[in-house]
Length: 347
Image (cartoon, rainbow, N blue to C red; front, side):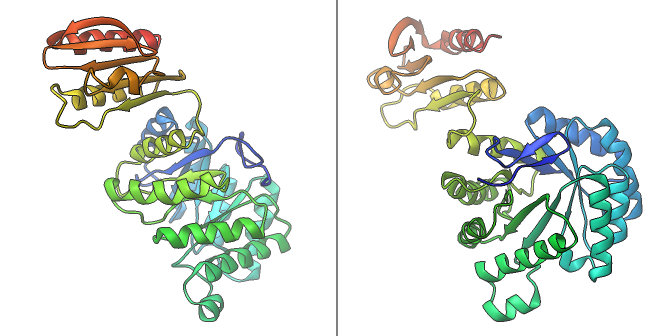
């Protein structure tokens, strides 16, 4: 089991549930825009949010953002120990740094002293673009150089008295990402922040992230995740939640299953399935809802569903736990079924 750290009041690691993270895309100095994104992320289910700190204005904005944010705020720092210190002094709940690009020992010591004074954790974020030169020359670009580089930088922080650390070793290559995290999990007990970096657009990025993050979580590796997409950050939260649900790592939700359809299907079950999924996505209720293609197989295949529907050209059968409840005309099926969906979800 990994060590537990606290980001604000949110526990990460130590057997706690997997925490979902994302990052704002608005300029951090534009406080209203950033808070708008943070609130949207929190409403979607985000546990921790990260903001970029490329300049002094962004570092100072952290204070106002933190004061109004419903979730802990992490400052993302590169190349400047001064900005790291300023962001921490302005209330950041955590900093993400790569000690290798912060500067020499004196700069790292400066950040470490500030971290300790404010009692916040640090994430050491390593990726294939920031591997220490010596390890790159020794191993090449692979899981060994990536992990050794991350642990080398963790060692620098440990030398300066920092022990509340999370680590990430991301790559855009999915198999490399999986190998790196598996190796890292054998080498330390710090909580691990999972993700496939530069995963791409919404469609391809969700596939890459689902494979990489899912493979690791199935092996019990990982404490917090970010699905990195070139899309609206809220889409990252939706994707993360779907990954956790598919792995059985989130309990209180409505599981919507749907028939893939075939030549036997005589009604538009796909359209209804999409409506049901959108309606049920945010519900905090453990249940299963089935939208099946045909009356012949539907109730049997979804016999364990709390509520289901199976259709034909002229009529649809609504059932509960595999037992028929009512047969309705096809043109009334959507209205009748959605009414029962709302009732099941307590709406």
